[in-house]
Every structure is written in C-alpha cells, then in structure tokens.
Image 1 (cartoon, one colour):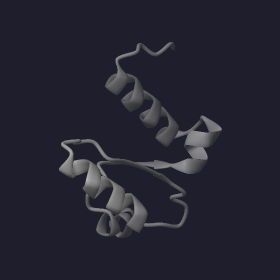
Image 2 (image 1 turned 180 degrees about the vertical axis):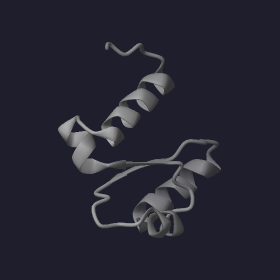
Image 3 (image 1 turned 45 degrees about the vertical axis):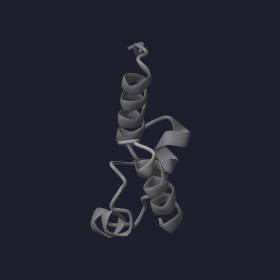
Image 4 (image 1 turned 45 degrees about the horizontal axis):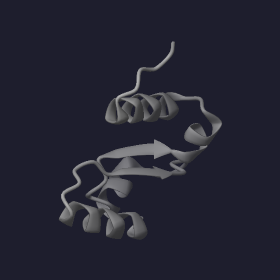
Length: 74
C-alpha cells in the first residue's frame, strides 16, 4: 500500500482527483486498507478484475467506461 500511496500523492500534486488501487483484498479489512492509503478513492480486488467476474470487476468496468466515455455492452 505504501507504493500506491506515494504514487497517488504525486498524482494529486499534478491535479488528478481519482485514485484507484487494484490489490488482492482477501483477508484484508477495508478499514486497514483505507488507513494505509488515504488517497485511494476506489478499491478493486485483483482476483476479480483479472478473472473478469464479481462485484469488483463489475464496478471497475463501469467506472473505467464512465471515465473514458465508452458505452458498455450488456
């Protein structure tokens, strides 16, 4: 989490406002994650994103499509 926090801090100084972190969330509490990276605005589970299934995959897909302005197919 330290590396994500360092990167996010540098990006924030350059004016970025969204900070996403993809990490294996298994057995980790969101409270702990948020405490270690206060700049992260969205958390996604790496297993779900790589496997392209699950709630975090759906959320990642929807947020990414919205940010870059592409429609999603059903």
